[in-house]
Image (cartoon, rainbow, N blue to C red; front, side, top):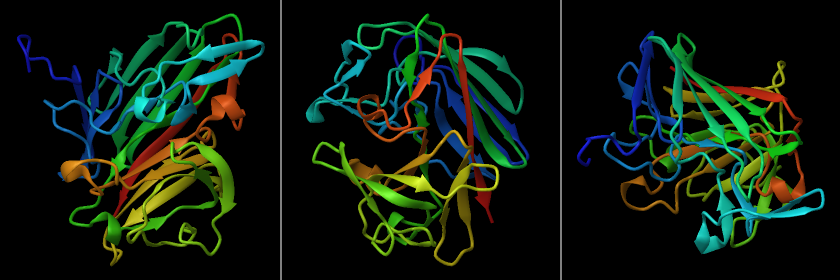
Length: 308
């Protein structure tokens, strides 16, 4: 790991309570591991490994892709770096590989932060905070973003956890996804239209196996819970175990990725289930894009809970 023996993901913060344990990392401010009673429910990565496939990363100030990295705000046309050059896209925001700083820590929680400076492609300053905690209800993440600039800033948010159940392959996993529409994409995985899922192979409004379906799909028109939030559930074929990932009312979209483009052992080994505030390419379409006013703070929460 080099002369200073620093892991590629930087400092590791382990939090634990009530049989739940998680590891939060400095680089990217995301989640490297989450387990309950010693069983790994997050398909994370090793301490000496560079984060693969955006596993557990925080995606801000936009999730997913922006076509050609070009968007306009008012009269200005802005150009982001193309972080997915093979598809000519700007992918997953600006904080994946930066070092977040610790703010507060206890046995069962850690709060970290990063102040995003203005840049040519995104000329706004944001203060980002994330509080990760574990307890009787599983893993919980609470996120904040404050606009430190003197003009409104475009903003979107997501996280990228890969979920797994012991000894259950992706094909056998049962998926319950309370969304009525999906985004149709082109060869660059950019949105071109939307379609109703009712009666199609993409209809998971009732639990059913994923089978051999290839998913790297954004789902919207989400069925909300009484509190305005929603949840996606992965379960074993016999119902003996499951995982619920929930998100509050700030998240109106779910991206589901079955890992088909990942190489080696990670190929279709787990399912990324990502709560998103907006769909792909929202900087261009404006769909559910948040415009943070100067001094305004956005707050959102999500979490994972094993169901046995």
